[in-house]
Image 1 (cartoon, rainbow, N blue to C red):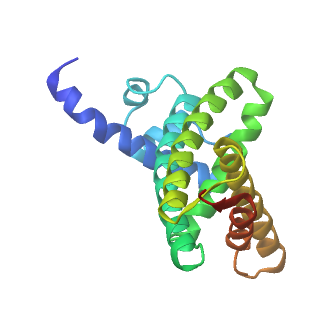
Image 2: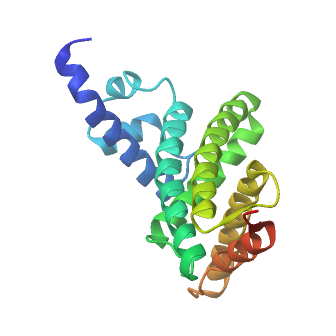
Length: 199
């Protein structure tokens, strides 16, 4: 590959990921075409296929990007919550809302397509492994440890955070309100019950 093309690749990939995030949130994963993504990014379909084999492959790259960012933020907020009781909160609720819409739709797509599901599961495992390390660090720094296997605790934290967020957004849509999310209280309760002072 020519050197100039190699240097441009990260910029091209970033443009495609940004465009995909916007379009998936606006009109849905299924309704968005590769041509749509390339056009929004100001690129050609050839540029898309030079970097991704398919729309699913692009989503999985977007998934990894979002998990890295969100796991790091969650680890930091967990540490503050454990240290001084600072409530867990989102730094960007609208971005979180859009990502939930995107990721939930893709999960349904994966459930209907076993090969896609196998790929998604592998990416989820890596994401949870990174989050588990951050949870362990946060607990260790505050003199606590999991009372159950760390992998199980991490899965529960993710399940509670995502499930509570879905409930809150559904209720907000139904009532036209912006009630505070309840997942922070639920995660606090989860950690209080499923961790203990280090022996």
